[in-house]
Every structure is written in structure tokens, then in C-alpha cells.
Length: 491
Ligand code: ADP
Image 1: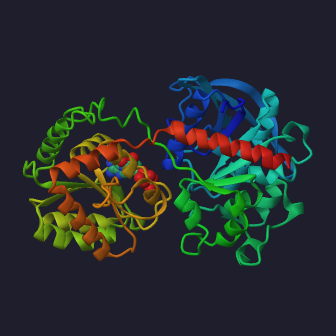
Image 2: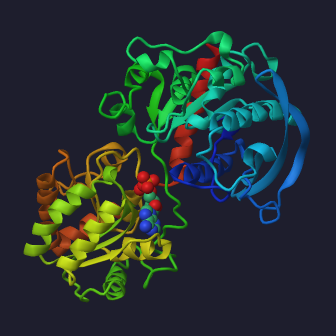
Image 3: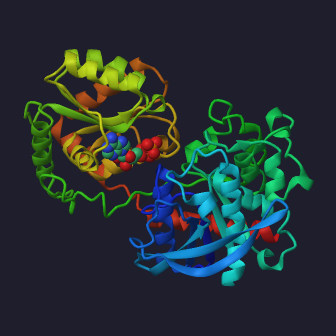
């Protein structure tokens, strides 16, 4: 079915390559390009932080200073533009500029963050009028832009410019809700409507919860995997907003993030010892031996190499890894390579593990993109037993490199890794449900046992490599959501 091209405005606090603190920036860096390639007119808006060098990114001023309503006055903004190239042509990135708000060292964690992002959002809505470019849909991401759906249903409700504009709101991280006091309502010009209320969420009656407002007002809400979209309806994952999400479940969806299939491609990856495809899998062994050598481990083709590439954080399941590693390393022919950085507690535990098993464990506790590629290519298995995982990229990258993921069935991990079934031969990895070290341990044993059968393992690797986690697929899904949002708005 061919789809009429839409005017899509993507609003975000972060975007690769301009400003990044997490996965949000990757999504906003990739999704608009894939949408553009599908023929839509896509434009992105973000703040022009001080760290974004105008010369390096060839920023051009496209809108001179114009007034932006804030509280009971106006503050000037102007818009600079960068261009991102995609296979569908260049797409503009509008950067809202105001020295007082954004000419600072960092991106977040300032006392006036609420003001900074309200200003950003208001400047974007007013700025589109200056540009006379009318979006069919505004795609907002995380709390920083959650006031937009609120405004479209309140102060912009009767504004002809936005009369037909729908709003999709994407939750990347429910843990950061953007919670502030009453004053923020005045700054945003929505004080006459007061707090939003929910009988089962007492705090919504006396604070401004931006994330809550985005969920409350958006035409369509989504998060970054189908399983996480259903998990957040429960108190365990809902971060206090599950009753509101339950009320809105008829418009809540999960769309898996994609991965950059050009950057992560074993056939062209220049970081790895030998490039390979599913028909030249013997070269994956060359990558494995090179990795073992670089990591200071014995070069042994038959020893299973398990890779871990992760933030060293509780949610990533490091306590399970720490408990299961001891019997695993003691009784099995296995090597563990850990690349990660994060909590000191986990750094210490990983260093202890290396000290206890120096011939079997290698730890690199820094951020190292090149080594990450080598681990994705050179490992036999990729371990990711997260407690919470909204989407997860590591397991999708591992699949692409034919490295078999071992994961806990949660969030995006449950949506991308199918547990191997010996009877049918189906599956692309190994997974377990209860968040218990014993469950992880027995799953590792299942994987190691399967690894001994070369033909079976090879088949598993081929099944893993056949997965399609490109952005094209996700962009298609987002286009459907945009249309649903437009239909909901019309209703
Ligand atoms: P999250 O966004 O929660 O950290 P994801 O799995 O979605 O987890 O994404 C993590 C990304 O960061 C993956 O691409 C992974 O390869 C990369 N990564 C994590 N830690 C490191 C590290 N220490 N060095 C290099 N890359 C890393």
C-alpha cells in the first residue's frame, strides 16, 4: 500500500551527531532519515546547545529573532539550521537558539531545565509559523517535549495553524519524568487548566509531571518495544504512571528501535580482524582468535567466548552475572570478556572476577567503540540478562554478527530473542524468565551444551544472522502510528 507523504516534525532534546547522552539521540539520529527515505517531508527540531559548533556543522540562521511567549512576557529565539543527508535527500534540523538557556557546558541537569525545555517547545511551535511549514504530525520524545501534546489540546486548540496537527509521544525512559512545581504551569501558560489528576496517582494532583502530561494528552503513545509497552502497565515497571498508562492503553503501542545496519555490518566492518557473511562463517573464527589474543586470553577455537558490552548498572543484570560467573568459570571451558563502564560496585566485582580467573576473564572497564565491534564479531555468545530493558541494542547487534544472545525475557529482549528449541530447531538465542542467578546459570549451561554440536550451532548462527532489525521496518511502523494519530486527531 502506498502512503501519502506526510509533513513530520520530530522534536527531541538530543540527536546524533549533534548532542547525545543516550539511546534517544541514536533513535532521533536514525528514524528521520529512514522516514525521509520513504518519501515524507521530515524535519527535526532540537535546542542549539553551546557544545554544537556552528562552523563544524555549517549552521545557517534561517529565522531571525522572533518573540516566544513565556509566562507573562516574551523572550526572543532564533533558528539555526543544520542539514542531515539521507538516501531520500537532505533533511533540515532546526536548532532553537537562545544564549541564556543553551549557551552552557552540558545538556541537562540545570535548575531551570523546565523553563529551558518549555522555551524550546514553544519556540518550535511559533518557529514553524515563521517558516510557514505546517506539520501533519509532531513526534515528541521523552519528557522534554511532552508539553507539546498538552498545548495542542489547550492553548493551541483553536489555532488554525495547528488545527489538523496530530501528536505522537514516545517514551524512551519512564524513569525520567520531568517533575516540577506549580510555577511551571504559569511559565507554560497552562495554569488556567491546573494540574492533571488521576485517582490512583496522588502525586499528579500537586506536581507537574511532564511525562504524565505527554501520556495524558498525546493522540498516540508508544515506547520502544512491544513487550515493554505491556510491562509498563504494571506497578513493577510503570514508575508510578501505570494507572494512567492503563487508562490510555487503547492508544499505547510498542515499536522496536532499529540498529544502524551500515555501521554494524560484519561484511564491511573495518574494526574486525576478518569480514564475514553467513556464507563465510569460518572467518568469524579468525575474529574470535584475534579477540582472544587482544584480550590476553588463550587462543582456543573450541572454548566458548561469552561477550558482555553494557553500562555497568543494576538494571543490566550484573548481580546475576556476578553470581552465575563463579560456578560457570570453575566448571566449564568458557571465557568471559566484559566491556563496560558504570557503577563502581560493579567495576570492583568485575575486577575481582578477573583476579580470581585471570586466564578465563578479561575486563575492559572503559567506553571503547572499536573493541565493542571486535567483541560482537569475535564472541560466540552475547550475555544480556537485564532486569529492565525498554528495547536494548546490544542483542540486536550481536544477532547481526551471528553471536548468540543469552538474555532475560523482558522488554525488547523478549521481542528480539527467541529461545532455542532443540525439538523444532527454531530460535536464535537462549532466554530465561525469573530474575534469578540459577535461571541464568542453567540457561548458560544449555547454551554451552548446544555449542558442542557444531552443525546445530551453525544453524543457530544462521538463524540469528537472518533477523532484520533495520530502521526501514521501524520507520514503516511509525508511519502507521502517525496515520493513526492523524485519524484520532480528526475524530
Ligand atoms: P542502554 O541504552 O540502556 O545503555 P542499549 O543496549 O540500548 O543499552 O545500548 C547500548 C549501546 O552502547 C550498544 O550499542 C553497546 O554496544 C554500546 N556500549 C555500551 N557500553 C559500551 C562500552 N563500554 N564501550 C563501547 N560501547 C558500549
